[in-house]
Length: 615
Image (tube, rainbow, N blue to C red; front, side, top):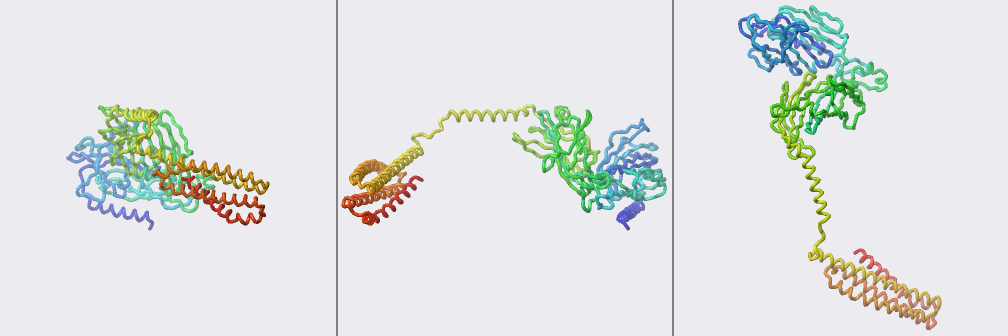
């Protein structure tokens, strides 16, 4: 037994039990009933026209409509109207009030709706009631998995008899298919298949809760685009714009694609190698929509086209890849609208009048969230929606906001194109609040310019009597003293180099007198430098800021003094040896240990100078 056959068997057994013990509700009688089932899209639309009669004595003010639980959970839209006349002269009333009820003595496994009639139906009176319903996820792919080359087959299950707690004199059913291709269908008495339509009936004198299960297994490659979640953000700006942003999480809810996907075959023969997929969707936007964009997480998607006229703007979008069964994608659509076309005034309030649902007719939305973002400062907010929704309030912060913008969040499950109706959001808003953001900008720039002027004209120097300023002056004096000491030390080293040069000239020329003259000049310069050095050392020794530096300076001076003494000893030894006409080797041997000490001292002096230079 197949899954479909087993399901039909259970349903048949279920409703046989109903028929055995269901009581008679009232004297209400359905004298004629015509049902039309439209299977041309993924939304199953059923229109039932009931001619009601009251043969009894009691007044009748309501009509009960039962739905099995498996249908009730997929029921997306239900509306009932009364009609009068025929053909072109036929007129319909506005939607009648409908509510969920739990009538006593009737099966609780059914979901019951009560339709309130515009006026009570008296004895012998009749009324024509038109009931329109829309179901989502009522079509089941069978098989559930197909390859790229397969066509999509769907199964629809229903009853050939209208499920009703009232007796029916005559009824008929017609099932409209998307194309004249059927794998199989249930054949009952008075069944006819012609073109793309299957007709059942007429059937006469049926008792309450009559049920005869049927199944239609047919071909349909219509898009099964389902938005598992759609978040529409409608942001009102009183500066002249209504910004719409729609975030889609889309899936192809048809037969799941299995096997490998060949883009080459798809491009060559898309109607054969991708018949069950859809490549583009069309959004019907308002006629004056502007600044339209279409993007996803990666960035802007360029595969879109826009065209329109005075009554509408059509946006054709194409995902980055063809959508086969089970494949998913996410994207965002945004556009702006003129404020004056959608915001109005009434009774001291402003109200937004805009459509609720998804602008794509072929998309079913499992969970639709519409967020209306009102200007900051809006209050006394109320909402009017022509069908039941879940309402909540939020707060959103945007640029230059102080207390946040009130957000009205409306949530609807199983949203279909029939829900794309106008709704209203009423609120109060003071015109003075419009000046809040401009005044904030003006004030901000004003205070910025004032701060710049104050900064340019203010004396921000530190007071000369403050401790920090005095400490800075003292440290500058210490640094100046250190620089002068470094300069004196460098002059001393330069004089040392001149003494060494005089000895080299002596070895070349043998002029002892010239060498002694150089020695005398060097002694005089070193004495002058020593006099200049003493006050600097006294200053550093007395300065508290130089306490940690003085030891290094003192060591430097001592090393330089020792270096002077060694150079003088070397100079005296060499000149005396030349006067005594000693040999060159003898002179070298006598000054060798002195030269080693000079080299070491010179290195130490250079190192100390580097340390002080870093300070």
